[in-house]
Length: 581
Ligand code: PEP
Ligand code: MG
Image: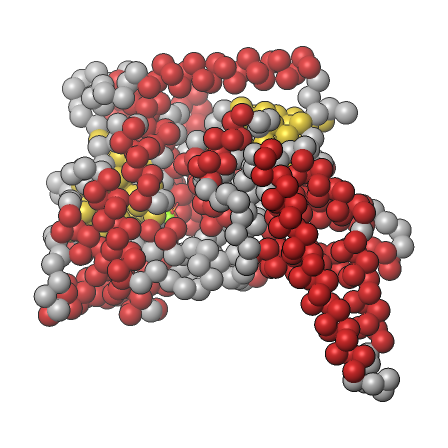
């Protein structure tokens, strides 16, 4: 039966594929496709894992028996019997085989997929005793996954998996929630699109989806419950709609739309070498936002003139608390700098916290009171000077290999500015003292807290350039959690207060002859390009996938005409109405 689920459109395009429902706790399980001749080997890995778990359980049972009748916990023995029974369960074993043989999922993926299928059946059971057996099944599967971790998989390279996926049926991922670190793992994955139950338009999960340039819908509420494993699904990333089990007519229509999006991309790709110059001759700088050193490939491919925002925190995520040391960071920054072949790279110091936890196990937003107002970004760095100094030294060392801008997130206080600058100086002195080569950097501050936007002269006195983080500036100006879909309708880049802060920041920086760019999602939104140009913005930083569409707008714009119009928009009670004209 066809039905649709509505959410927030976060990443453009249409994806059509079979649903893969992934429980939040199992996102870090490897997902790749195997070839038919690898099926037997994968079945063997499962058999071995099961044998290991069975042997473990039997060993515990034997030691319980040795304790004698007085200490032999009968409940535990009974529970272990249940686990042994579940391991032999026909529905589990035949189901897992089905995903391996028919869909070519790797062993871990097949196992967790079947767990999802059976879990849903347990959820629907009337009998509370039987319903509780779901937890036992999860424990058994977890033990098998752990046993498999020690065994080499026949293949593990995501690139190979991605290539194979394109030959098979496309797959789309449906999950309750995905952390930015999870998304990173899926970056080279087999999935053609994503749907999550939670998340806002500029949540970091949505941002990573956009950077991957694949259709995604977030905030789709109960999508992960309504959609079943293997359902055919259409993700309309432009409208924020997910169509489940579409009729042949609907499918044909979306197939047509998919081809149109392809053609549009093809057309835009011709602009790659066209300089971004407005009709009145203003040169506009188009920069890329990246998360990992390898993203520089996409940045250059899109014709970026540099990296305007390297979100360094992605190097820190998903490492079970083991932060990258100075050397590892240095190598990563160096790779990004060399990847850009002489073009400038703006490295932002670590910005974790709020909706970017270091690990999936780490406290998430909902475990804290107002995490967005807590210890994140520069506050986190200043709270751990040794960690911060290691990052600063790594960036300064990498700066010996090419032009680098050092960008500091979320500053609001004069005291934070002074501490940060003192630490940058100390990092330099430490490198000098150790005789380690390092290079010059331009120092920049992100303007993403209203307090900063209202004290721009202070920032201009201390920094070489400013970068406006509109994602957070909107969040903090309007008191809207950017990751919370419940208030996402109030998250408004065109709120007059936001526009005033953005416009006055641009104007003050330009007056002083200092560089200013926008690196939040507003920079990559083609509906806002003309307005930002009219406000005087000449430097935009965005995901590589958005650069050519923004360039197309720039080529059609006249900044002289736009300046007057932008002033009107800034005075309007309802700026959106003027943009629609
Ligand atoms: C922003 O806040 O606009 C920004 C670019 O930083 P992030 O999205 O990483 O918080
Ligand atoms: Mg920010």
